[in-house]
Length: 162
Image (cartoon, rainbow, N blue to C red; front, top):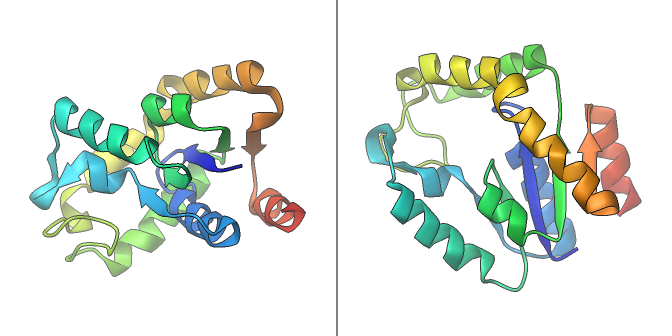
């Protein structure tokens, strides 16, 4: 396990697990938020995103968190945090409260959470029908290289197994 994608809905715990896993594996951690977003919640162009992703996946080892089919194709392991929307909403609200009027450390400058709340709600709500099926399609293709995690206990059990 040298190239790991941690994917799932917003608020699922991707960054938290990704950072812990990167520490355990002693590999660099990267978040897709740094690739997708620029200052003031401006979205990077597809070309900018593709260029940054190509640079990251060229590395020998990494843990990347986010939803990216390019990263998924380059990963040797995919970890899918498949948690209920209610948990994602709760975790996102809890996280965003602290950064309501300032940027989180893993985001570009001038990205206060208050400006993205409506979009975040849509992302979380739509994820089960729009994104989840595409991620689950990888499960059959990858077999044991696809880790399907559904709870906090599953996360802890998985980390202990390493």
